[in-house]
Image 1 (tube, rainbow, N blue to C red):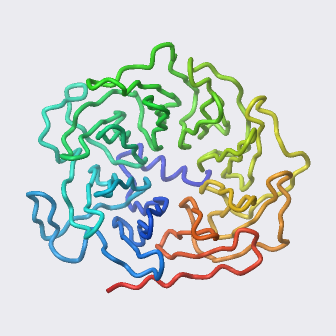
Image 2: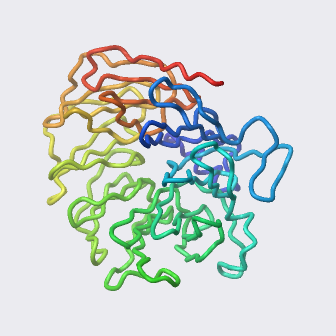
Length: 379
């Protein structure tokens, strides 16, 4: 059975028993927001890696009117969203949290716990949040495992709107101008116009794209196309205006990591351990005779850093590839021997890698130096 198939099966049967999360770290100015412990988010000083705060803390959980002896968010999968005052993120417990960016105090929690009268198909919102969210005009938009796209007020957490997308959402919506593209585990890509102050409506002229298998990757914009992939072992290019398929590209396992685009080429990791380079206009392979294959599956997306493609497989093997032909720049991988599922990010000229257990490593993009474990210190 493919990697994560058991995870998907468990989710379909009522939830993941031991969710860990794979939230991508986010760097905002001098602060790194990262999940170094499952079910928690921490603000870390980017200069010395000291923890400024962690939420929830070890004391009683306090959020708005809530004051509880304990609170388990279970896991955080989607990358947090940061504005000038708050850090927003969804958790596997089905709630969205707004945390004060300066001191880590919780300002509100919403979604399942909301007092809103909004109903979706005559039922209250309910379901784990696996994908990330986007912020538009004071509204947070995100999909849930319950098959709904939600819009909630970023200041209060009140549910403003919800729309049935007919399938669980495990990815982050793509925001282009004021259109939201939402991929679902039932194989659909919806385009929703969020320019109106009322309920978001289907984008005029866009016919919902439908495939036969679940879509897992975060949709991305590549020119005039939306790229998305998933369980069907295919990467799709969809016309952003009308939803028509432009091309499809086949791998030999699931596409899960978010593709990355540079120029006329998209680079997509696959659970078969390979990286595929695809011409955006034609859908043809951009690399010929490329033999790279990591020893383990690659869930994390590739990262383009300093002209080099950096990929990290599930086992913590880190490779630097030539973006023009996919050749491995170093004969041996940089190895951290820890499970890695989160997308790596650029960090001060290096690449920052987060392991499933919350360890951080700095990696030189070209692989000239061995990875350096970052010592995160708590007050």
